[in-house]
Amino acid sequence: MSGRGAPRRKAPFSLATACAAMGALVLAIVIWRADVVRLMPQTAGFYKLVGLDVNLRGLRFRDVKVTTETVEGKPVLVIEGVIVGESKKPVDLPRLRFSVRDAQGAEIYAWNTVLEQTRLKPGDHAFFKSRLASPPSEGRSIDVRFFNKRDIAGGSV
Image 1 (cartoon, rainbow, N blue to C red):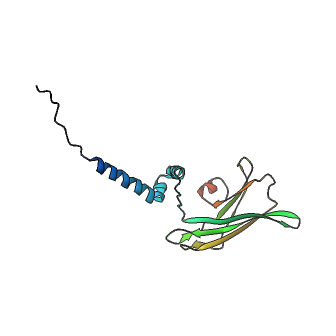
Image 2 (cartoon, helix red, strand yellow):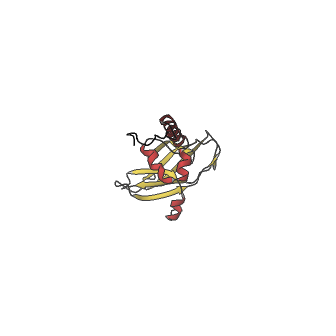
Image 3 (cartoon, rainbow, N blue to C red):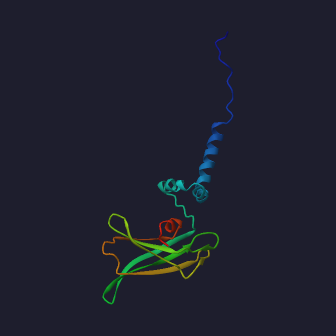
């Protein structure tokens, strides 16, 4: 027997090929991230962690302002802003859900509203404004978001 081992087999992929494949995979995961999150919703947290936005609705809130007015001696909370269509096709506008949260972040009051405009074309804007008479005094923050299926399950219709 000679001191030589078994003949060396050639690797099926070169290092360059493996790097190119990994690069293409990473690029695809970034470019098609909305599709990835639609298929695997648990990946949304990963994208947020690495600083990438995933917008499945194709709608974005802009210029949201919360002010207080006094009407007949009572405080009235006024929430207004703009929704912008960021999709490549027209999008139906869902109801809006407003919630008041306390200092610990717990929801203490919530309400929904239907927008006058029901559809938004790419690049178009829809304005919204909602009022809450006598808001809870323990309220510290306001959330504005789109109504979703979890709200129906939670009895917030």
